[in-house]
Image (cartoon, rainbow, N blue to C red; front, side, top):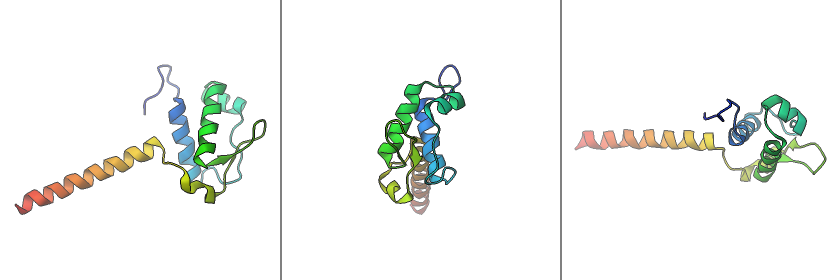
Length: 111
């Protein structure tokens, strides 16, 4: 995980964290996500980072909310269009690379 120079998580890292927590059921559908002030206190980041993370979660279908109202975790049926976070993608690529290497070893051993 690459954090910012001051040791705080970046906006992208926080977005991945919230995506993971929602998908894992740590944050259940209907539960309220942190407000801007709560998010700033929890993570030591600006209101802009909170806005960007909230906007991305809504865009992913993982959260719903209106300006000036609480942002909540969306119902699971909204999640199907939500992209995997960068960390999920990295894990999938690593697993695929390992499988390809294993297949290549098998092919070489048969030659």
